[in-house]
Length: 250
Ligand SMILES: [Zn+2]
Image (cartoon, rainbow, N blue to C red; front, side, top):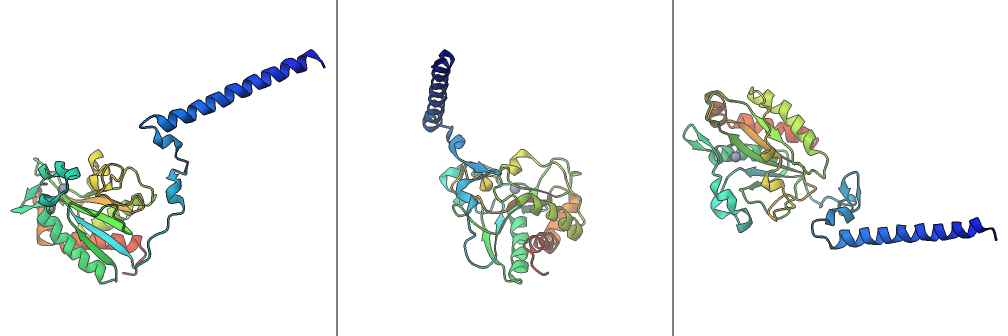
């Protein structure tokens, strides 16, 4: 046998051993190191394996309407930090009162089309699933000139559709309210606690399409008038968004 074949065989065996040792070590590392669990999870197009064959629960179209800062006194321990976030106020109204009035108008509009609506307080049910989840808020600023609405989708969106919902909203809401869009989306909006199913039990199911809406500034006279005197207008803007998104004849 030629010498180079014997050497070649040794080199191949050696490289094979190195590759095996490396793979074994890499696996052990990801299996045992806390915080590295994500690496072992197979993902295709960013969607984890456990959701690739996910099927929507059977039943009629369902929309979750959350009233921001509502019933803060009932939040569970994991959300206790929320008790300090009472929201903004203006025109003699607290943020949750304004959001509740809009949410109730929205509920009536959606139910008139056969959509099942869950009117939800600050605490939502664990792993809450709906075809659309909307959290309703109003903004505040020390500068009364600051005005406008805005909406944001969750950072981590396994549905891949929440951004589309936001785009429709930006168009529909401007039409029904006549307000302008405020482009200052904060990181806090996209990381809203009710979207954060990794951290909180009382949050949306990962396959729930969601957005958080700042309906306008309660501290701005023009916005305030629209929000407080005509809650049906912001409600119509959000309803039209959902009808369009869910393909419901309006
Ligand atoms: Zn708020």
